Image (cartoon, rainbow, N blue to C red; front, side):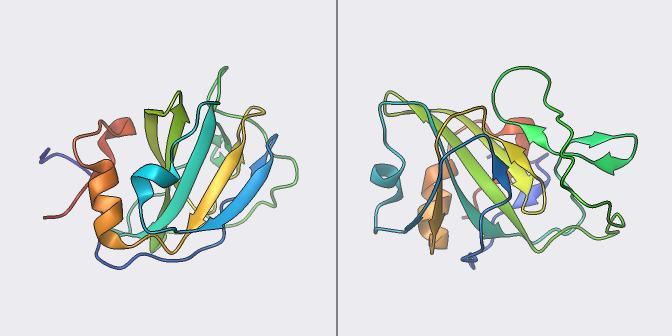
Length: 157
């Protein structure tokens, strides 16, 4: 396990609504009992779910001139301007939960990324599947041994 990671996944997961996702067909599914089979697909697809965090000092999103503006999940620069996003005060403490995202193609997890649930995302035309009710053990197994974007995830145990 890596020791210099910023985020710990706790035993309690939340059944949150997905982050705001544009440029995608968004589907919501209920956890089926096996996360590894739930996130399998041949075509490129983003899968995500919410996890409760133990550290609340992160706002993982893309910013432009101190304004949270959203992130591109596919190609180009990581920042996009979300004109529908209202300017809101920057929270001094991060959220109690974050979105864990997996980019899957050819039944292989290609990327693992973590964003604040309040961060607008542009999926670049790729389907986005939000899974509710993912238990802690399934989340730990899904992220165990996978490199996480910017070393944000550490499975407990």
